[in-house]
Length: 76
Image 1 (cartoon, rainbow, N blue to C red):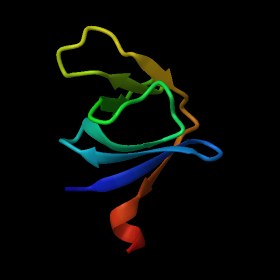
Image 2 (tube, rainbow, N blue to C red):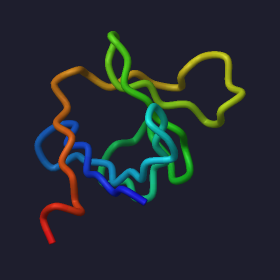
Image 3 (tube, rainbow, N blue to C red):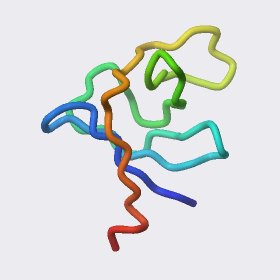
């Protein structure tokens, strides 16, 4: 599985794992209060949308488009 870090802001990030080409699952949360372990996240034109599950009808939060996605597998 591909692992990434989503840098939301200074000293705020999420560790996410690719589920498929469009969806990721949150595996670690560092100072991002709106996101929780196990939430599902995807990238859209609005930004990074966080859902509590696949069948949720609307995101619980939308993170900004300026968030930086870092591939953790390439850093090792």
